[in-house]
Amino acid sequence: MAAARILIVEDTPSQAELARALLADLGHEIRIADTGAGGVAMALDWRPDGVLMDVELPDFSGFEAMRRLRASGFDGAMIVVTAHGSVSHAVEAMREGAVDFIVKPFAKARLTVTLQNALEKRALAQELRVVKAQLSRDQFHGFIGASAAMQAVYRTIESVAASRANVFITGESGTGKELAAEAVHRASPRRARPFIALNCAAIPRDLLESEIFGHVKGAFTGATESRAGAARTADGGTLFLDEIGEMPLEMQVKLLRFVQTGMVQPVGASRTEKVDVRLVSATNRDPWAEVEAGRFREDLYYRLYVVPIEMPPLRARGSDALLIARHFLAAFAAEEGKRFRAFAPEAERALAAYPWPGNVRQLQNVIRNIVVLHDGPRVERAMLPPMLLRASPAAAEGTLPEPDPMPEPAPLPVPEPVLVAPPSAVSLSAPAESAPVPPPAPATGFSWAPTGEPAVETLAALEKRHIQATLAMTAQDVPRAASLLGVNPSTIYRKLQAWKAEG
Amino acid sequence: MSAIDAEIAGQLAADLPVEDFVRILRTFERDLLRLSHDLDQAVAIRSLEQYRRTAHSLAGAAAAVGAKRLEKVARIAMDATSATDPREVAAAIQLEAKAALAELAALADDPPG
Image 1 (cartoon, chains in turn purple, cyan):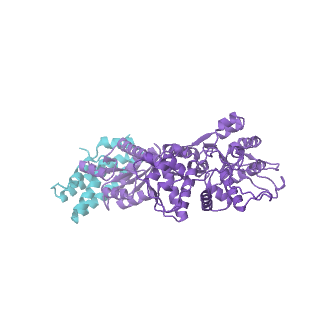
Image 2: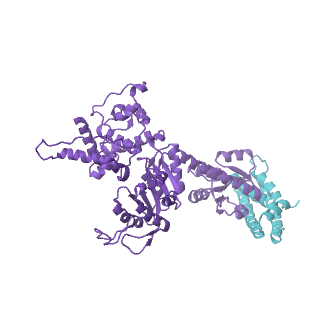
Image 3: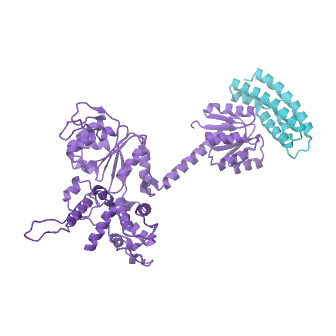
């Protein structure tokens, strides 16, 4: 058993010294208090693992001291030590929270065994509390979810966080891969150092090397200043390489060298520099399939795929969808100044029944859409986008009447994708993740000038096309598209609503 | 009958390094002098609570070093149902304390083992 802190509350010096001497070879740290008040104060301040409590103390009884400690939330193991061997004393001791009871005189073996048993019991109780808390937690470093699938993710993140091992996160689009990477960083001893995230798909291949390793002034056209690069900026911290599967093969060679040596060579520099970086990579593809297809280097795969974390899709997370929906509803209602506080039961059933191909990101967009377009004390089923209603028809439920429609405008579906970018841009190099994006629909809304005049697209049509293209690029992630476009997400939702009304 | 139970004192000596054993006996001697005085004072001021609490401390301390006769008399004082006159008990405790101290001094000078 590991060394513990033991407090002896005893007013007779020879008794206190005797207990201390008998426990000496167990290696525990021992302190002595000679009054009830002193014992309580020392226990609350020093937080010992175990307390040997005399009953007869100068100011008040040991039982009273235990009562005060319990009332203050003290959770150390308390053992009553007394010259009274009566049953009533033993019963009172146990009632006040003692785990055991020793009658003076006691032999060394009796004292040490009793104490060790009490400490082991306490340690087990503490472990049980921790495990129970872990198994029932519904939030973890920004994640919301109490499902077994997410508990497994939390445990893996906690287990791996303290090590230097590289982490490889896989999962469908919108499952929270970047959040997982941040959680690994925040739970690690590197948390005070930088967390640098790079989306390999969003950076032109010519700039990727410079983005990761930096460059020196004049290294290439436009390099007017030296730049540190993500790897050096993340020194001592974590470098998150998102969409690692999109990294060109020639860049993979350079990354492999960096992973093997920890040395950074900025573009145009003749010298290398040692950095201490923990790598977390992510992809929504099957990394081994990419290796087999020749698109990802096998040696780099083995270097990066040390501890895998697979983010479960929302459809595999049970009632997490509702937990997350409630969280987003509260957040967006506060942000938009709306009254929403809850979902109607029929709305919750529809949310729970939908398979969420776009995962948490899609759920986030749906809730944002509802909050922007409606108002009321609760979200009714009629406010949900049609795709959710189709997946969970009210008639099929057959138990609850259809709620009264709200006076607000008819619900707008989560933006149906109108993809104008070539499919290859989505599947190969664009930052959008392809899995949840439905097939491209024909581009609409173009306005051509009459024959004979130069073909000029109206400003409104141009705006619509640009927003739709941005939405396609971001896998219909309205907040992200809004961020890229420099507008509020509400603006996009309102425009989508207007375009829908136009037909 | 000896004032000190050889078996208990021997076990204590076996459980502890000799310097700890001697130190604890010396500490007990000081405790005994103080507690005997406190007991007399409790009798003098007729404080039953102090009398019983001091007797409890005496009994525990005496039991720990094997001062069985002293422990036995102290337990009479501890007993709330005892009809024995506290002055008589206090006098008996003083006698047993002296006997125990004499034997403990010898033990401390020449510890067993």
